[in-house]
Length: 306
Image 1 (cartoon, rainbow, N blue to C red):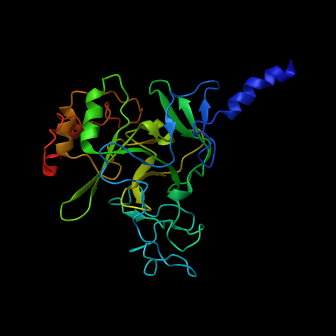
Image 2: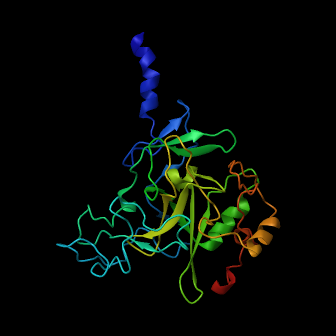
Image 3: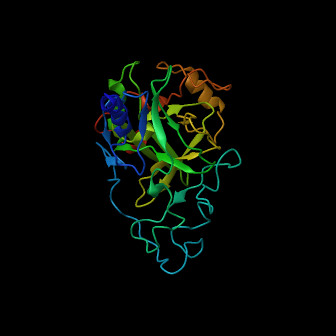
């Protein structure tokens, strides 16, 4: 009888939402429950219409064999260190004017696996748990204390082309959850690099992160082996055990809302209510109108996409 009583607990302990692919198991709460099935992946995978295979290695490696990777000598560190001695992102939070580009050492680099410019690629370092929230469906929380600046997890999934993003968006109903994220990076001469990621069917634990108007995570594009960025989430403040993890779906953590954004948001039709509970809650989830425009025709020029 005693053995049969212990069996359910043993089965619960074996449940790992990450399918044993991460460094650490990711549990689910309450016991006996499990999120909807999806294919787990640690990294981005090539999806329909993507310009570049995210698994290709296109960056050269550094030659820091006998010396540590430091700015000025390491080809991966052009300006300054990305992380401090505690593996925390150096520029994060309200004191930073904008998100600085991050390039980590890659598989072709001659530096060791213990190089301090290898952080995101090391994967999970904190115990996380997928849990059922009261009003937001599934969420993600930490079971450990996470210091400000530490890497928490990636947002990984299919890397899509813009026409495929539009096609999938058009198929959604007001009741469907939208996991597709559009990351736009302003590079130089007014050019914008766009990355579209969808973890709906193929993704990682990042897909369970909910939006907050006062988030405790900040998403930073981090490049390791190629120009396809890993969408890395770092702690924007100290995070205590059992605190829900969240980020701003609009990407505005470092960018204040301007008048143009307010007008676009007010005119949105497919607005969903926000239940983040923050004092500054905007009442509705962020809305990217560019993803909801009519489907492009096959011969539409590149310039007409934005």
